Image 1 (spheres, one colour):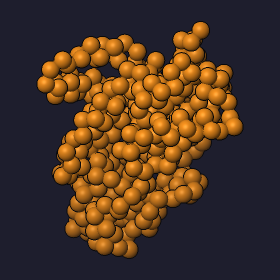
Image 2 (image 1 turned 135 degrees about the vertical axis):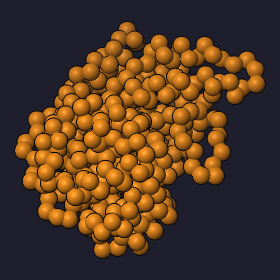
Image 3 (image 1 turned 45 degrees about the horizontal axis):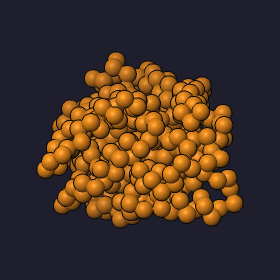
Image 4 (image 1 turned 90 degrees about the vertical axis):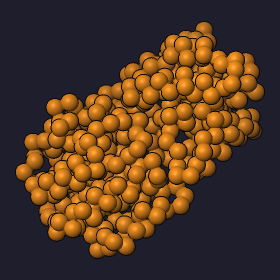
Length: 369
């Protein structure tokens, strides 16, 4: 079968998911994308861009596809309203939701983005969330979000969306069968930051923790390799100045192989995120041998096996600093934990998840029969 994937924000986890699905699926999936910037304008206008792009291209017409795939940063309701009967059955994959997304400092909620998420879910024939954590947060927040309306609140939409939604973790682009891990790198240990350079990942707390290590006289190196889509946050500018020679990489690595090689050199990966519905970057780092230190909240307790929660999930900033200092001192001895955690991430390899995705696509296609 043949499907069209419309991705208005082709970067980070959105890009990884779209490329992985199109590569691993037994079906043919055509990608139509826009660069990963100006997400607010993507939600408002990407549907119109894609409509014109499809109608003016030399590719197949929209009604030649067995199904449509898109993500939460496009207004699927706008797209379907204008295409009408020509639009095939649609699957919406929710990486995030503006109903639950934290606001940047000084930012006020624009309720229209939350309503776009809601109408996209209503317009979809099937809705998939990238974690149970995300699914729970969305349906917990939706009633209060609808209560913002002064009257005529459409509470019926909650059950309507829930009835056609499910949870399916995104696949990760590494082999399902893992070879031997590289030996632990030599001292000093390399601490990895491979998340977006944005406020919701709370880089201030990350750099504060590293400065506590400096005050304790501990040796370490740092690689800051996450994507930065627009303006460099002030926390990174300050961190670069304060850590100076400890930073061996400052900026995104365009080469996938260079990125993976850096992860293999890493001793640990840290997240201080305020918002994380899955965490592909963390899963990738753990798979390559990095020991994680993650908040005991968000999606992290879901992706980390329970046997390791007390070791790698921290309760607050003080707990992060304590656990991080202990790891820096003792990380070469934690080989068994490293091996077992890396092995456990294999369940997120595309090879191990693609059957469920192909089943979803076949289920979607049957809607039109």
